[in-house]
Length: 577
Image (cartoon, rainbow, N blue to C red; front, side, top):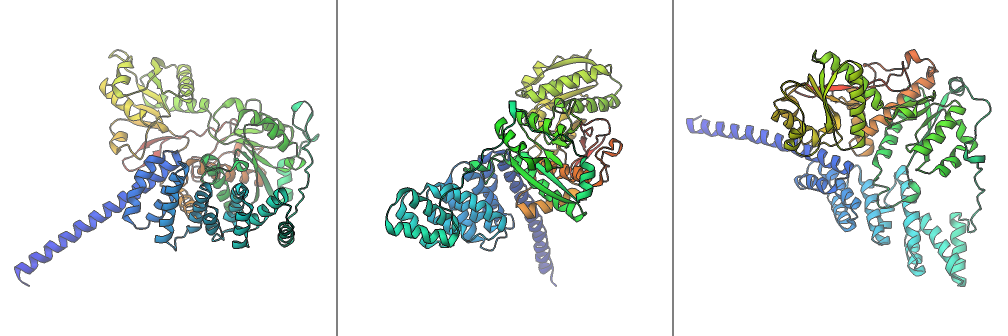
């Protein structure tokens, strides 16, 4: 080989290395943009979601069809139905064998129905075979198809889509209400016979109401532990604001996404419990912020057959159901609330998330071991949740003998925050605490402290930072700890399995709410099946258990005592307490 040939080979080899490295970096960037785009959809920031997803669509590859779907999803939620339809058509044309194509058919049908394009919508729904999705199709079509008021148009569609029972039912109903034509009435009879349609609706008996607006209770409370062991299965009532009866542009794509995420997590836990020999029956109750609606549910005799209740999420419905649970000896779980009052003098009620008070106590205990300097500055953001946690933390510190050198609300840019801080060389704190629900506040506080030349450790709440946007330097330039009840340790095998399973089944990245729903049902389902709900000494999890979040501990009270505090170790966040 000549010297020139060798040089050419070396240049080609170097070029290949650079090309491989460049492609790897591009692939990593595409993955990051995809995950960021999906996250923005979940957060309701649809414009930013579309901006992040568009390059993923253009690049192609394995993430592209998913990006198309979420791009259309974001358009749909913004009521940009034409854009959603165009995007979904392109997705279906380019990726006809995509694993989740029936989800695309569903969303395309919904967008078409919203624009009154019923023929197009029906052409998509007839392609859907997934049993679970077909249930959703029926609900959607029961909402949209009755909007057709033109009898001839409806007859033409029914003739074209003969297998669609909802369409036939809609036609029969319209004929009965508007037509006296002999041919129409004969058509109505034929369709009624073919599809088993009952023309005259059956009147429903009114719900039994309790006197003086109070829930009905059983006279003799049941031993739930004994009953579960005897019958061999667990009935779980889930009382969430699903709002199924108000299908709209946001129902299938889920504006109240957290509710459906919680429930999807429970469904995965149900499957896992079944593999352990624990049979769980989930009964979903659509409970909104309506006391009368709640009473109708709990006054039904079958409701008392539940062995565990999860929800409701609103104050008055929760009060009614909690009273019912106490009278009937049924454990009730508050899945996302952090108000300790919900469990005060309620032995059957539990908080799945540690209360604001518990978070403050555990964090103060951690701070007491962090430094010998017993001075602290406590700051908080604009939300009421922020100020409540800061006030609780201030009280917890004072109880431990700390001196609070500064306590105030901070908002805005770093310069504004720095000027608001009342810190001097004489009262520099041993640590700073900052509670905020705004992801831009965390970096601003770090900058403000640097401007004030304060190098003390910072303990902040997890939502004060944006982990997609903030650089690694944000988490390493000072001693930073985060109070994170919602922390998912991505390095744990259980978390990896959960994420992979959820993504394969739901075609989306699981949110924290999905993990919360999973862990709640898994923990309390196991306790009920083992008959250990009344044994407080073992009502807890261990770090080695297969939960996605940090677990539960009710050995001292019905308030979850597990409050994770995490720190970035150079590669990922890890729990340190």
